[in-house]
Amino acid sequence: MSAREPLVVSIDEALERLGSFAAVIDARSPGEYAEDHLPGAINLPVLDDAQRAQVGTIDRQISAFEARRIGAAMVCSNIAGILSGLLADKPREFNPLVYCWRGGNRSGALATVLARTGWRTTVLEGGYRAYRRRVLQDLATLPEQFNYIVVAGRTGSGKSQILRDAGQLGAQVLDLEELAEHRGSVLGPIPGCPQPSQKAFESRIWSALRAMDQRRPVLVESESRKVGQCHLPDALMARMRAAPCRVISVPLELRVALLRREYAHFVADPAALCERLGRLSDLHSGPVMAHWLELAQSGDWDRLVELLLTEHYDPAYDRSMKRNFSTLATALTIEVPLPAAVADRPGALDAALASAARDLLASITDPAAP
Image (cartoon, rainbow, N blue to C red; front, side, top):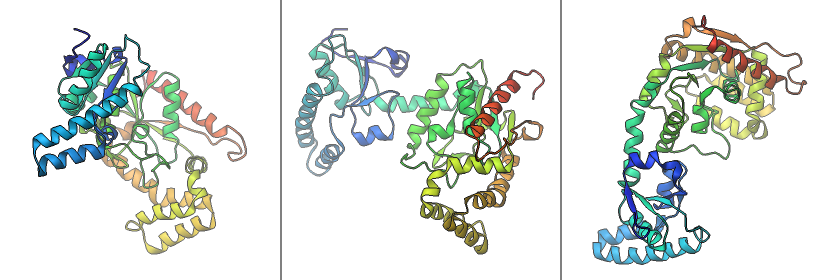
């Protein structure tokens, strides 16, 4: 390839070589980039969101030529800013991969300038659209290539932390709540962390699975079809529901303590908690809802959490698990004992969950375990 002309590669070749590029540059607008992008890509837009909308309006209302003329001036100005900004210190050996929506004008303009500057520049044929097709194609079959072990347990059993601990001990973990940035219930939104788009969520699952060893089991939490607003791919959901389970069994007092720690932001903002609880009003009677809200407003947190578990979450979880996970009846149970002085002993909760993670891993290697 001449250093003065960009090379065009297919999505297969681009993904195979992804780690060899000094940077993966998304030339689309910030809004397009935010919705989803190639793994590790940085956004260097040749048209920002407002400019892209303006050019589109001109194309529809005046003419395609006028849109190209005005758009070209914007693109040239923006590329000049890119060269004097984020790319100003790049060495001669810099070798970026550039893409836009479909590998057309935007990535072509930026890649041509970068190549003529002297950098060995590559363009993704078909752009983001080719990548998105590849993700959807793979997610229809890739989940079927793994063996999963579903980590089940009622709300507040510390499943997410147990999975994190297991991952630190070397297990392969597909943490769907982490990928979705949501804890998976009506109280699940994480303050300051908006969920990814559906496309970005699917890209995260795809990236995680591609990095895993198909010869080893994958631990995954017993999620429903949706984690917040993010939908699990059908093929993954089907494999999870047929997979063997491990049930984490935790005393109610310990679950209350775990949830109080995990949802401490609601203790600091009772009004936000009351707003979220209001979303359960179609499922429970007026007196029940009134009692919960009263407990929240008065700060009787242990009693509130206990009632939410026994009156709402536990029955709903038990019904869902019985309906959706066919191997639950024969699942091995991992008991998490109640530490002494849960509320007063530093590290007691973490130690109990770390022990459960070790027991979980031991159960996976036990040939007698289901």
